[in-house]
Length: 297
Ligand SMILES: Nc1ncnc2c1ncn2[C@@H]1O[C@H](COP(=O)(O)OP(=O)(O)OP(=O)(O)O)[C@@H](O)[C@H]1O
Image (cartoon, rainbow, N blue to C red):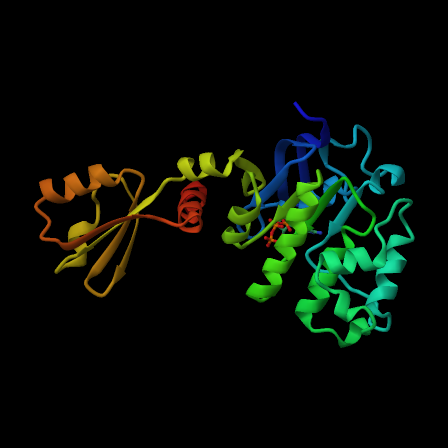
């Protein structure tokens, strides 16, 4: 097994009455590209802040490179882009890169970093004059300035257009291909699917799944069975239906077992037409599964 670069052991983090993380145990191995996936408020940012030494756990242990994440020497081995960053508006892009790089002994040169993230044309521009997307690309690039072994990116491409997002993905992939380790959170399922090999699904502070992308897909393999029915009420109450959406005469039924549901439709003599069965996107499957876990009011 490759070296463990970061780990949490039975970590709980509370903010007053809110339990943001509940007994989370996770190992991040060298060379992994891990996607943290979960709805708003799941605890993803809290987990990153614990790994980065910005917060302490209420109970349990957090390790970075085998020691405390609060140790500055260990923290020099990581790069972090938080969800929101405030960059000094009067600095030029190149100056900002130099400023961050100066904190690390083996930093990547300004030019190399800017080229890796397709920012070289902006080197002389003042940060205050950059677009939101350009600032975000710079904030993500800065996590890589110190040639870290391990990078934490909290929603790296939120607010970016498709082209900028793909440019960032390329930069992240190149770092990973050269042996770098990445932990990223994203609300874009597409992003997790495009980048991550391992997916950790978090909801309400707990790890629901921790596996390969293919296995997590299997775990949440929800299908959408769509039929046209004269009366929407005829499809309610069928066994194995996780959720129903109505769109005019079309009823979309979410189920983990499409074959059985179709048999049930026939057995119940439901007068349906236009049957369609298709796999859901990971996003739909994931939302269905996490919704099932929420306590019933
Ligand atoms: N500083 C804080 N004070 C009080 N509560 C907090 C604080 N930080 C986080 N929380 C709460 O802890 C829970 C987890 O928050 P966290 O930001 O870790 O979730 P997240 O998965 O990153 O969410 P999002 O996807 O919306 O960024 C939420 O209920 C949040 O309101």
